[in-house]
Length: 349
Image (tube, rainbow, N blue to C red):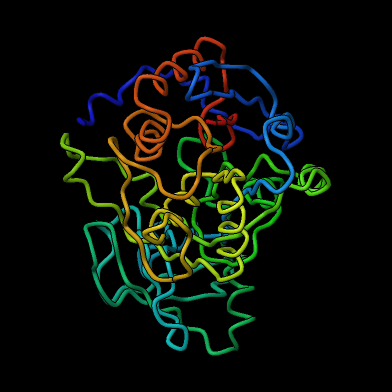
């Protein structure tokens, strides 16, 4: 398929700028792939669609305070430094994106904090905006991480046109986040509160956890018309034996597997057996799912409403079927659903 097929007109006022008051109070459209039926619900109603021994597979990655602002030595120019991933712990080497990039060269020093509590040196150029930097920090790892947390801010996507606040530290994070490493939240999971999870467990729905550290590639525009030529950024994932036991037992006994989010789906679709069972593994995945595609593990999907021409929308179309998904998006715009990271949910069954 072609990228231009995933274009639609999205009114900017539908891009949610803040989360809903309560997580599970988000709206949820339910789309049935067999009948084509579409219903308007709230996320708390998800319980009505799943039964005892069905499984929700969630991504337990944890977002860290990845966006920092520093000053360049001598000139004092303000520079945004977006932390992507740590390359080498003992040496404090990090892969970052800098903006404006033209001002930042190898050998430059960057100072962070009002009192210049943290200093970094640029040691390599990786892409036009990418750099490798070394933080000059002699104390232990715990105090270094605390300093990054103190100086960094919640990495809200640029489409959210406001400064992050204290509430975002909690709300741009799932309630089950465990392993730090994501620079973007797995947004489908943001709709679960601890209370809703408890109600799911009381009903007998099981939770299996996988990890995929969402990178900035999630937001990177696709620049090729022929989707088969698009290359995703690689992201670290891990699927444990425990997760496989929960998922595979449910599959073998005819129960449903619901992927909570596209990142969860990508992790599962990276590691499955010939019998379409989930397989334990860890590593890096750049799996790009686009129509036509046969899914192997999950039979339902929770996702948010995504922006035009994004890999997230394209995967949603692969799962729901292109025509049905685009029809659902037309309805979402007409019914004023909220889009993007803090937006409403779409359940495809």
